[in-house]
Amino acid sequence: MESYTAGQPIYQDWWTDWGCGGTCAILSSADQAYDGAQSGYVSDDNAMDAVLDLGNKIFGEWGLDFWMYVPAGKEAYMNFQGTVPIGSGTFPVGNIFFNEASGDPGNGYVDFGTGDTSVHRTFSYPEGEWFRVTTNFDFTSGAGSSTFHMYINGGTPFVEEGHPFASWDGTAWDYSDTQSLGGVDFYSISTNNQYYVDAFTYQDSFIDPNASVSDFAAKGFSAYPNPVSDKLNIQAKERINSVVIYNVLGQQVYNAKVDALSSTIDMSRMASGAYFVNVNINGTEGTVKVIK
Image (cartoon, rainbow, N blue to C red; front, side, top):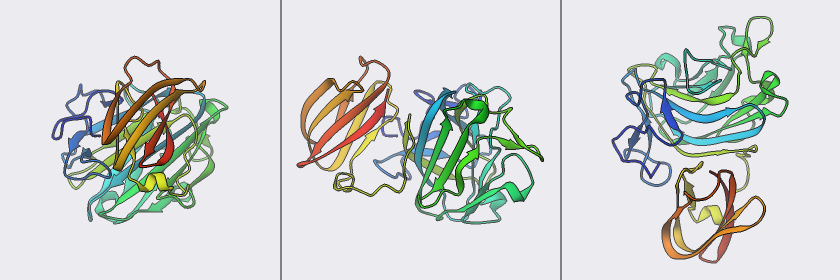
């Protein structure tokens, strides 16, 4: 979230809102951050209705990963949308509550659009700490038979692998709201709502939140935004020696010596698609995948 101006709404790149024209967009904040110095903030105004556009995907496997911070005693809310831009709204799996109505601190659930608690999926999260939210979507057989699974801070997925990406109509799973993988709605659900989101990764493959932390990751490396529009920012806690970028054909499209803790890479002239960014940090090499 470092490419945006602190204190200002984010209404560009993959960030939009629920038809407000930018007036209910997520706010860039320097009050909390998982990495870097800024995050996205959803306030207590009971009106903010920010949307992360996921591209209306109708086929393939997709992984979404980000970090979230809910202050102690506060509540939060999100949902997935079946299409973006949003009209009246389509809710493939209903609502995702964190400390619903401020009555269950540190706990949340996915309701799948029903009050039938037997189909809800519950989870716990640490209050006043950053925690990781990972969701994998399987659209390999199309939207009408899509599935998903979801984690909080890794471990075992609280929404199990192979669960329908659909709502419950009382007798069967209903895919009528699953036109595609449209986006994520981050809504200010009450005057006690308050949360921050940061460090987003969205890619055309599943994300394993239980992968071990490598020496490379331990050096504090981050690349943002991902997906990238024009400029990719990289930073680390130790000196970045060099950066090389390859396309999916293995062709080198960028090569630079950095010798600094951070760098900005202009990707505006690169074609849309996936790229592999190979970074040497003080002698340790690692590769991250970015989407343009």
